[in-house]
Length: 125
Image 1 (cartoon, rainbow, N blue to C red):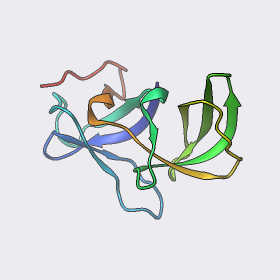
Image 2: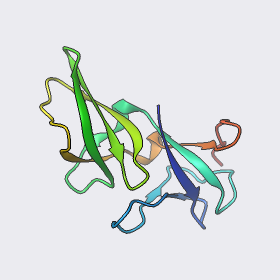
Image 3: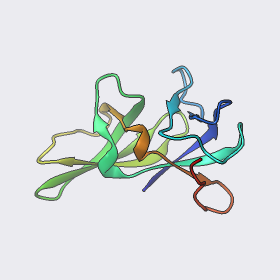
């Protein structure tokens, strides 16, 4: 599971990712409202297989390593100004070079929120 620093949005139905550098703040819609209070610092969890390539995807990712596994390729890299480590699993043989920028998106029902202090998952409303 990838974990990214974030805060619960004011409406409880979205999450705002931590500073992404020159890019505007990234706000992602959640599939269901969360039990966490607005403004709560959380860890946004998303599994490597749930990040999909998308030219306009909000997850901008700098490739550090492409790891071919046969049926799949794991891309390891860094996200945003915080340089958080992210792993993406893509089907088939994917050619990616270190330093290359890629964009990904995840469906709202594949975004999970965890308490930054305890690691426990927040319940959906």
